[in-house]
Image (cartoon, rainbow, N blue to C red):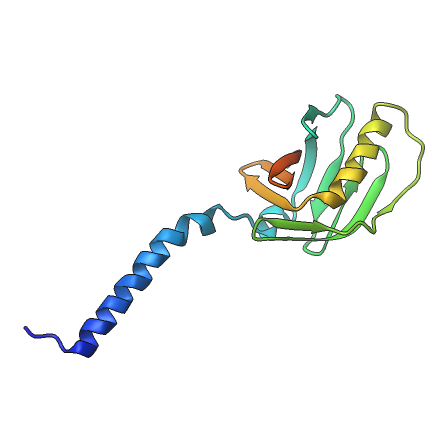
Length: 144
């Protein structure tokens, strides 16, 4: 059977599209989205490489446009986006102002300083990692 040039070109183009799609597929599957984060209460387990002290329970919950939760003693909230592995948390945060004793006050101070600086995120099962320049600085687990 003899193929015309047009048919051959179409088949070649289709093969290239399929091959390129196969090459990029793994990256797309590994990318986390806001849907992976939203609607879950995440409890902080590690902050800047240190385990969170027992009895201190900072949390993060994303509703699609904002993050909120406990910062260890007070409650907080801020505008946020989670998309394609990139997170942006507004530095314009609201927070209640109750006085706290250490270690809760120490964790809270660091938590509220670090959260608006993060630039990346990854969800792996029940774990949410927030990173800065590619290094995990906050690790949460699903409390569900």
